[in-house]
Image 1: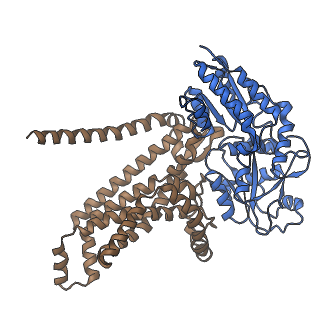
Image 2: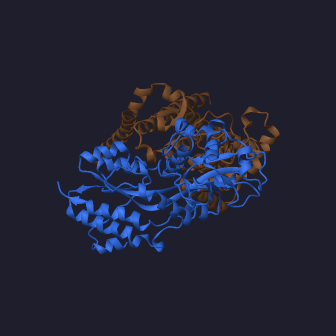
Image 3: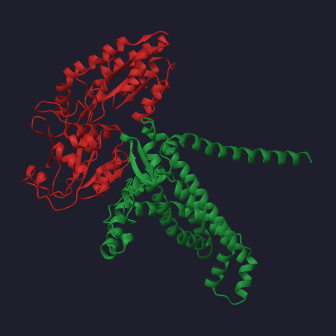
Length: 316
Length: 299
């Protein structure tokens, strides 16, 4: 890795993929110097650190959740759905594909009288957190009955129409294998694995697919509402940023974060973190450094991070 | 004299340390799961729920899922592994025997994530199309087959586990079978027994090894995490039939542990599940061994 060479092999960055929940917990214990997470720090952890010198957190990349489906005869991009219908499917209230609510939106697809198999993640994941935050935003009933989290209790399981699958690849396989199913994966997986992606109605009433344009539009619509790097982000993330305004915005767009302590004992650490994440926020945002399915931050959002890096300091 | 003493001392040391390791596992299981048992008591193990948002956990469906998938696995694997052991030691010539035994031992050492991926992408669709759907269509009136199956469910997990444990059970049985003194076999033939009768007699002779192989395999089936998590359906609900989706304790731990620390009671709940699995395994082994002792005495 370039970074390793840069420091003459003296410093190694040990980055392990342990899940957003575990990452936050270990960060809280002080085991980690920084953490990446699909959601910002929970409010209680943020407040705890506020007294101990503060927290810096900011977005580093934009991703989205794609709604994927398997209906024989309906190719990708043909199916249109709204957030309310999606919530009702996962609540177990809409159980057949020829439900009037779905038919009304899709007059030109021959929707059969088949049970909807609703696939969801069985392992705790940021993807589930983002999707359930979206469903909570668009459906009052979802918010009350289920809520948003890494893992939730899916009402659709209770009527026997839910399938739990492990990982994005598990959900993709389950959707491919089960005719008349629906599921959700990170947009990157949906395109890579050739799944059928549904158009979702945004708050302006238009139906959009998760593309880099619609994700970018969503990010721009959110820009004015983003906090500063040393502020609490849990108030608006991920719930409030779902379903943003704008005719081109994809409604289930979210950011991934990095989280730092504001004060480190070692000045070298501060310098290195600053150096590395400056790279992440500038040169790192060029398309050849970004995995397909994610998009770079608009410069204004990257600026939040760059200011945040300036706030890192060394001291006791 | 001196080496004898040293030998005994080293035996003592290794015995004690393996005992200490097991004991400390049990202690840490109890210590870590303590909060969930204090909060929920018995209701944690007699209800079904997995709702981290409300910190509500109940693991009975997963305990049942572990029992169901292991039972399916053993029911399929036992006849298969006995046949495989007999086949490879009685019926095929030397060269093929070595190849076959090596392949079987290799199967035992494959990492379980490979079985899991193969199960998800190959086995599940095949079972769904050619086994489960036909069974459900024609025999769906039988309660055990009454759920309209999706490819990933308890039955698929059971079959996958069976495939995973056959090499274990069969290698134990095979070794015992080949260790039977040759004169016994000759004596049997000289009494005028035919081949089938000889094989049956020899299998009777190694009953305890068959038991041992079965329990070794059962242990692996009950403890399997990743492979099962990929094909079991992962639904925390009381299964209505073999074709229903479910959870096992081990697959629940594999699925939920990475983010468990984000919640106050999920880590204790998962350790509680592990503790119950330990108790269940212990109980099954005790029953098994007492059964074995009775059978061996009867002979």
